[in-house]
Length: 349
Image (cartoon, rainbow, N blue to C red; front, side, top):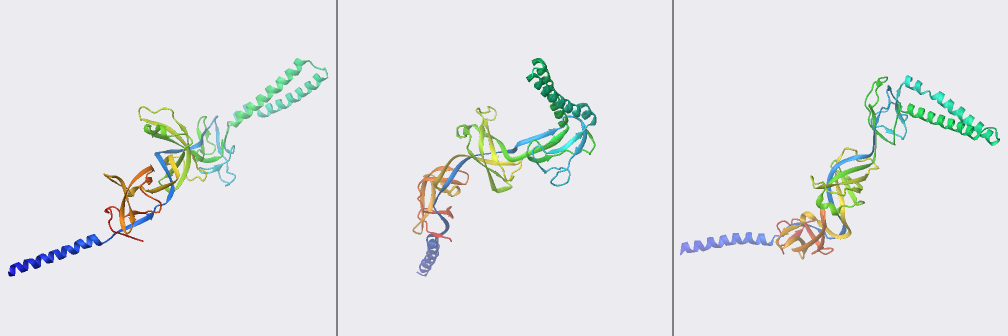
């Protein structure tokens, strides 16, 4: 009888302990964080990476031989250097070649032009008065035209000794030559870029061929500037798919007026292929995939309420919900992993 009573007492103790644990598990609400479902915009992207390049870029080479002379930047008072801003047609350097300049005979050609023009004017006046023949007038005109061509040719020949910026931009390369060093024809003297506009060539998988069109908006980001997104548009799309890579080429023009990005940067682009200005949009990482489909939890009367949802437009971070949620639903965004339908929850502030 004594053993029987002891067994009953032990059993009651175990049940009591177990019952406390069970009640604790079933009664303690799970802590969760929520957000109120609102309407917002969403865009769907096709992502690709590539290296950005300047739309305007020029490598300036010597067109003739001469002795190197780097000029001073009028804005700094020092010789031009890499990183200096230059204006269109601004003279950066020249190659001194006295022998070549002498052979051009620029002063002689200029004088010839002046005299032939005067002669032509004289002949034209005489022709109006009947003093010369039509042939003599045209001979004088031809001589004037030839002299003008010869003078312009001489100017162009001399300009070959001068290196000017072909457009407004920045000097990005300036090979060093000791002042007075003779530089041969064909040598690189400078490189100028204007990267207020950039372009990006992307290899897009062939499966997305029908989704890419010119004029589509493009988001461009760089890993060192995560908070700065530039915008561009698709300007060209190859009409065929490369049989070896199973991809096609698309070119993107990027607006870089603030010079945030630099040529040579490896960037990530997102070509916008779909979008809505007003939709129910939720974080993508809170969706659970179950046998019944895609599910999320909302808070309803102090408990988790599981909802099966249908989705539409999506991107790496967000997704549009087309069915299963309503505006102002209290969507659980943290603490949902272990929840079940009708689990008690406590919303954390």
